Image (cartoon, rainbow, N blue to C red):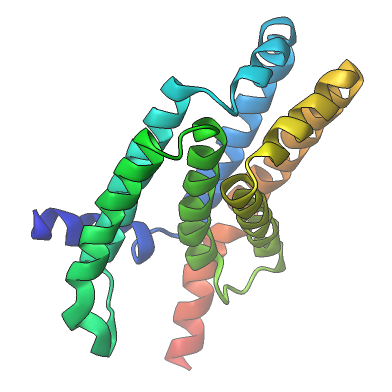
Length: 207
């Protein structure tokens, strides 16, 4: 189990290239927002069920639990490595507590937790990389962090945000279009610029 956890951790936090992350994030943004735009009649009313959804919350909370446990097991804790077991015990306790005790807004809390975890690999892949267009990924990751913190700490904010979107369908369409445009920008930057990162760095190191 430890070897599997270490392998996933190294791939997720050390092995992902800027271009690979840009392509995946760009495609996900485009696909999700295109589907959202095409199926507005079904998705827009369904959004109001998301903050308190047990099924959706359980799904994302389980993924977040496994992800967080993997990080706690494999990350370098330096001089604190002797207390690693505390994190390995605390994470399952938080998982059980959120699933069976503090589950009023489970969908919002679980999605917020997932966004917080997803932001780190994106920021790691873009950290100190030459293309200025990497900021497209950095800005998106920090937006996930801010939104995730609100959804975890004050999950009713997701309910209020959804109510604001549902009040005028034009807002929903505008957000979908913005997501598509941003995804296109990220994907274009990944295909045109991010692939030049590795050769550039190699040239700098050679000199």
